[in-house]
Each structure stands twice: as C-alpha cells, then as structure tokens.
Image (cartoon, rainbow, N blue to C red; front, side, top):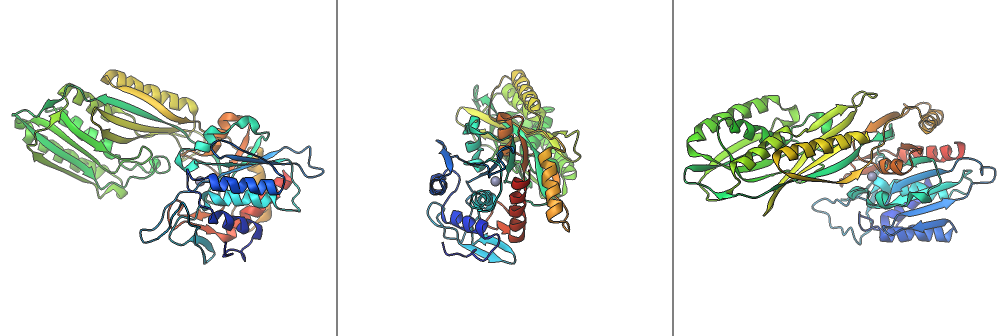
Length: 486
Ligand SMILES: [Zn+2]
C-alpha cells in the first residue's frame, strides 16, 4: 500500500478502501479478501463466520445503553468485475490496483476500480473501527460472486441473521435510494435436430443476417424499446412462411441471455422457384422494420445472399414450429408497474439462439418484481413448447423485492439526508428492473425492512469506473449517523 488515498476524507473509509484495492478480488477469486476480513475480525475479537463460498458475517454488540435498540444489518459484495483497457498490463489475480486521484474522483489506472462494491466493504470495516460510534447490535454481511449470478447471497445461511433492518450498499448513485428490484429466471428451450435432410436439387440456400442493433442490458435497458435481433429474424421468417416452405439449416443470435441480442444469422433452404417472391418479402419487411426501430437502432442492417452449399436442414414442419415459436414468444416489456410510473414490472428477453450438433437451444431471461408473474411467464413458455413439440427447463430463479413506499427505514434515510445536507436535493426512492442481492435476502427474511444505497460511482464495470470523493464522505457520514439514530 502506498497511501495514495491517505489525505482523503473520511480517512478511515479510504484507508480500508485502499487496503482492499491491494488484494485482488475479482468474482470467483475472493478467498484472499475473505481471509483479510477474517483477520480484521480476529484482531479486534469480533464475532466472525466464513462459509464455504467465502461469505463472511461479522457481528458486534450494542454500545452501552443501546442494547434494546433493533439490530441493523449492513451488507455488500466483496467481488469486483475485472476489466482493463487493451493497452494496460495488469494481472487481476496478482497485482494491486494502481489508484489515482483526479478532479474529485478516485479511479484505477487502466482498470476497473471495484468501487462496486469495495466501497461497501470499506464502509463496514470503517464503521466497526469507529471508536466513538454509538450503535445497536450490528451485523455485517460480506457476500461473494454477486457479479456472476449472486452466488454468495444465494448460498448464505440466513438463519444466522438476527436483524430486521438491512442497509445494502450496492447502489452507485447518491441521488437514488432503491426500494425494489426484479427477480428473474432463465428458460432454456430445446429444439431437437431430428429429421434433417440434405439440400434438395430443387432448393436454394438463403443466408439472412440482421446486425447493427444497439442491444443493451436486458433489465436496465429493456424499457428503451430497442429491437431484438432474434425476434426480428422470427418475424421475417414467419412472413416468408406465408409464401413458401422453409427448412432451417443453421441459426444463431445473441451470446448472453441478459443482453438484448444485436445480431442474428440464419441459413435456410427454400424451393428455388420461390426465391424471387421471398426476396420481395425480405425487402418489404426490411424497409418496414427500418422505419419502426428507435433512433439507437437506425444502423440496423438486414442482408441476404444466395448459395448452393450442400448442407443438411431441418424438415419444414419443425422449421415452421421454430419460426412460429420465435415469433410468438413474449419479449421486451410485458407489464409496467402499477404503483410507480415509468417502472417496468415484468419483462422477457429472447437473448440467445444457438445451434449445437444435436439441438437448437433458445435461452429466455425473464424478470419481474412480482414472484407470481415469473411463474406465469414460465407457464406461457411451456404452453408454447407444448404446441411446438419442444422441451423446456427453467433455472437460475431468484426472487424479486416488491415495492412498498414509506417504510420506516426509507423515511429515516431520507429525513437524515435532508437534515445533514439541507442544501442538496434529497435522494429519490426508486425501483430497478434488475437483480440485487436484496431480493434474495427478502425472500429468506420477508419482514426485513430494506434499502439499497451507496456512493456515487460512475462507469461501473469499465476501466473508466470512478468514485466521487465528496459523495463518499456524505454517504459514509450518513450511514454512520443512521446506525446511531435508528
Ligand atoms: Zn455491485
């Protein structure tokens, strides 16, 4: 540690933040940081448990006179996203981050900073090290693998937790307090590659590609109305079905279930005599789609070419079922929240279509802040699969955290913010349409009063990630004040 941050306030917070930045802690590589946390607790004789996935729970007794106050849990994840610029030499398994300060911000030279969510870790350690802090019994939960599927939060034993109040510190914008998040699930639809027949002499192969779309995150960007390349492919192929048989020889689109697919390509056989009418259809729908798409998708390209490759293709019935399935599956925003304007309640994303040696697999990621809506979407997908003769399985389910306004913790947070920073605009209570560990915790402890907050961090998950120093001081002092005043 070379003390780059040692002049910054709050001193205790930045001291721990810098120590954390010295210990590599990318997702899946959290053991060293978990050991550091255990040592911290051991040195101070603090109750500490580390579990098999490196989650760490610490608990401190109430200060004298605070024994009857309600215990409070503070929580954040210890893993970070490891991204670096192409010219940067950095080994995320070994090297400490190269911290810099510029214009009121802390950043790491050429790499992610891990303020998401190292700031939470540093807040928790600094609070435990505040000699003067008067507080109730407090619990501190450090989780792992958040960035790669909320692994730590999913595997933690919540019977260890006594608190019914949770401040999660994984939000990156001081002007917002999060009070709801979406749950989710992944559905995998399998289309068996049976009855494949080689291209016939009277057939021709068309290669159709859709590219140039903006894409984006299937939760955070789903309300922007950006086009899904897989769905557009289904739409074009479905129109072709009205004039011709189609036999699919290859299809692939998107590469992550939680990203809106930007590209899709499909190779299919059609009767040669239908080629001209098919070209007319593709041209007609292409120009319609180009008119319809939002401004960010205006670079869309829909290209096609003809070939005489001799390749096997699915029979026309299975192909038609697949095309109609892609066309009919619900996608994008399904329902808006009834109590909060401009908030998505339920959505779905046909993120990936991939062809393997014996199957075509479609992956759909659905999200909702209402648990029963996820069941409904799963049932709808199953019903469509039943019609089409495909099989489906669902996995990676995690619960949502439904919005409730004006909880005691929300009110305390906003009131304290106004009291400490009367000249600033108080944070807005918001919901997000993406997963947070809070949803999982709420699933285990339904009567927990939860907020998610945090310091302002820009450009998370990129090498441009940076932490605002003034915001760090405000949020640290705010959390410190709240735990002594609740
Ligand atoms: Zn995070």
